[in-house]
Image 1 (cartoon, rainbow, N blue to C red):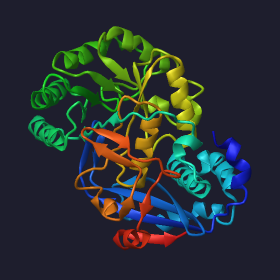
Image 2 (cartoon, rainbow, N blue to C red; image 1 turned 45 degrees about the vertical axis):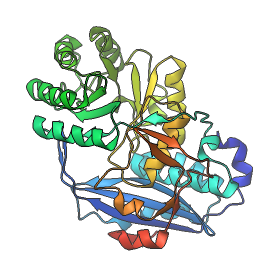
Image 3 (cartoon, one colour; image 1 turned 90 degrees about the horizontal axis):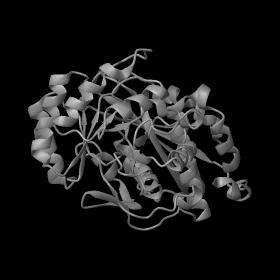
Amino acid sequence: MLEKYRSKLDSIVIDEIELMRFDVDVVRHYSWGNWYSRQIGFIRIASGSVSGWGENRITSNDKNVDVKKWGECFAELKGMPLSAALSLVAEKLSPWGNLRVEMAEMALIDLAGKKLGVSAAELLDMPGEKPVPGLYCVLEDDAAKAGAAAAAVKAMGYSSHIKVKLFGKPELDKAVITAVRKEMGRDTYIVGDVNCGYRMKKSTDPVDDIAPSLMALHAVGLNACEDPADMDHEQWVALQKKVGALDLIPDHIMRPAVKAIHTVIPGMGRIYNIHPGCMGSVIAAVALAKKVRSFGAKLMIGDDSLIGPALSSWQQVAVGLDAEWVEALEKEGESEVFLDCVRSQATEKQGGTMAIKASRPGFGLDIDTVALRKKALVSTIV
């Protein structure tokens, strides 16, 4: 992928690194608990007047997090050539963790493309061009509220696909799916994400007891189920065989990408989730996606409640890899603080799909940095 550009990247030196923090106080319900707030980090890595952008979630439910301390590791990149910086972050998965490595690498890819005049799609060898359906996610643990949220999603134009959070509680999950199906109609593809709610911890027990619960959800309108339980690879394969037409989607077992590329096997589901924010590397995520494609499975690009520059980047990955859908979408009531500062970007919403409107260097974002800095809760030069 990037290897053929390495010599040119030797002469591009990182001058400045800036980390911005934004808090989102929107409650999100999961089978394992709730987020009452989440702390989002944007990173800007600059060479001269050109900036590359990345994003990830710093933490959740912790408004006391020290963003400067959290991001002090990024200082290692200052003064380095881009080629060396890309090599360094690839080695930092353990000490830095998935979140920091992924956001830094995204910004470095963006910066590299902008300096070279080459799109991220070309840098990462992602030739797809067709628009990809958007998968807006409903996170409500009340059926009536889930139905109302689905109606709002449909009004936004996302009518072909929708995602709902499920909770590992059969009656509640059936009620949520029934309400959403009623609002969306018979033709919408509904994805339910249980976050392992039907078996929270791995077990050697057979998956026979999980299959009937999933088939009951399928009977009331569920088309696909993401992470129904915490399972090993062989259990995934066994469960997909037992649930017939219901499409299974492995997610948690796909993280981080540098490890999953060595362990993922055919038959674990029909659609595999490349989960933004959790891959630990965009480069490795693309390689993992290509391996999944090699054994005939489909791909989705998920989301990690992101709100800013990473959304357009992952939308481009979805298009470039011909994914079935992309969940990383700008969110009403959450992304405006960022979008208000965007001068232009490479992706756009076309009906219920996300499309690349024009090929641009890097990931293509042109951001009013001064305006964005004023909106940040914290802005610090690392």
